[in-house]
Image (tube, rainbow, N blue to C red; front, side, top):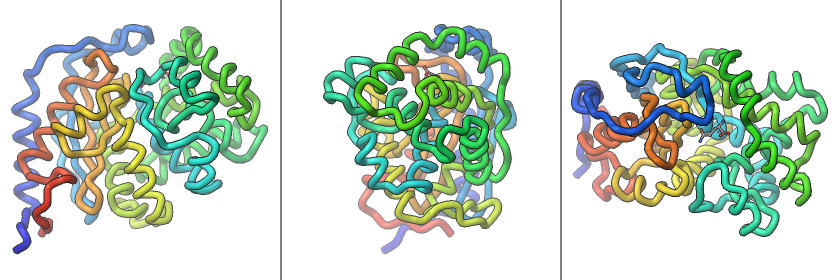
Length: 320
Ligand code: GLN
């Protein structure tokens, strides 16, 4: 028999997760990007959006934080939309690296290959793949329009963060040139790196990220606007990428203990996708040693476990 979960149970679970996790301490703000080091460490918010559009949020759900590596998700989707899922597989790959997000070693180990669009190397390659080729402002518009479509509202560039990252991104510059050496940059190198840095510096809220996650969970249909943004096939592809590498070298431990494919960013955001069921986003700045938000991880995990909705659970569930 199908187990049913009501929307009020979902709302209660999100509120309880917020209350259970709000006093969790531990972790430190990203220190290698000066802007992020200075964000208030006590900020915390969580939002769940259902395929039907209902949204349940608690805490600082309207605070705009740096999207950082969560931006790798929409740009991978855009590369699939503009080219194809096969092109992303051929030009970037879909393998976990098992290494930190900014690993140069991972590129060398893969023998020329960025592995996945969800680590820095693959995300810089993805930015180089976006059309229109050679046109920085056109590409930026495509990247931000895509995020706006996925969220149902626009992100806003945090100028100070963009400046802060551009002045300190020496490791990413090395990655970009190494990829160029291996013919894995499909446009101007400096432009591709700049687009990556700029997209990481977009300000976003948990409300917006939950809508993006729900769009992915709903086969590409944005539940807030009703607009079909991408074809359902892309949902399965992007969710598989998120599942294999979303938390970098902690991804296996995360999936084993949480049961939800999720992607983190060093701004403190986490975006989680339960296919067909819901999108979850949480945010709190202090990070663990792999760059994943300590409190946001606990909150997302708590929602999934309270509702018994992990993707590996075998009992059929219906949200009514
Ligand atoms: N902009 C950051 C970087 O390139 C993003 C890293 C992250 O969020 N994991 O280092």
